Amino acid sequence: MKNTVQILLENREDGLGRLIGVFRRRGYQIENLSMTVDHKDLTRIIVGLSCSPLALQQLVQYIGKLIDVVAVEVVDDHTVPAEIYMPVHQSA
Image 1 (tube, rainbow, N blue to C red):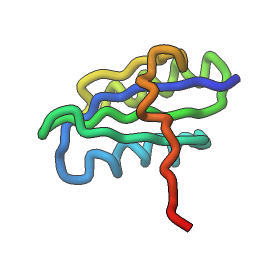
Image 2 (cartoon, rainbow, N blue to C red; image 1 turned 180 degrees about the horizontal axis):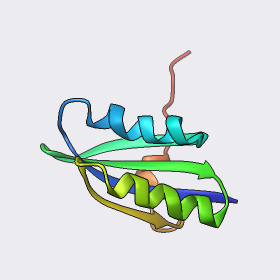
Image 3 (tube, one colour; image 1 turned 90 degrees about the horizontal axis):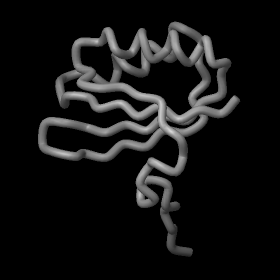
């Protein structure tokens, strides 16, 4: 089942590394990842992955325990801002 998780992370040294480490250590496969800086001290991260509902619930709990995480929630694709999914055009 495809899922989208939205994470609000404080901009601290190695915060992103710790977050990605949770996915790696627990064996979750990230299908897509987008990051935007909301404020100078917060980063919004949108992660797409496929997993069971139970595995998703456990992941949200693991992420929520990280010290740099301000908020974590499961969202549907309709609540994610469209500009995050806009493709980057490369010049030929």
